[in-house]
Length: 161
Image (tube, rainbow, N blue to C red; front, side, top):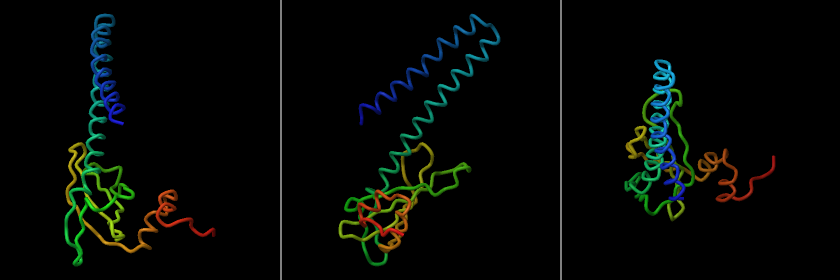
């Protein structure tokens, strides 16, 4: 997995740097029009590289949220290193700028279900605003209704309607 990630980064960097000689060649060959085209190619490559970097950091923040957790809610202690994240979903408005707002359905090693809510600024790699909400098994089932494979893994085959 790490090798694939490294190859993606290498390809993105090579694409960004390959855009520069192409831009220079276009300037030499096409004059003023070549300047505009070369600038657009270079800008697109740099923006794409930034997007890849932001996505990787957002994934880093999602993976870091649960291990950071250690809090008491309703007289019970929730420790992230002794829990497992079952599923993650994004709950913010996709058409608005701002931080990503995410929820994870989690389960402690003793079987208590809970929802972990947190945010990450786009591209920082760090979660913030962690909030725990203990939920019942029925609420966990409802949460997983849209992912039948995970539902079956934890609750078995649902009844046929």
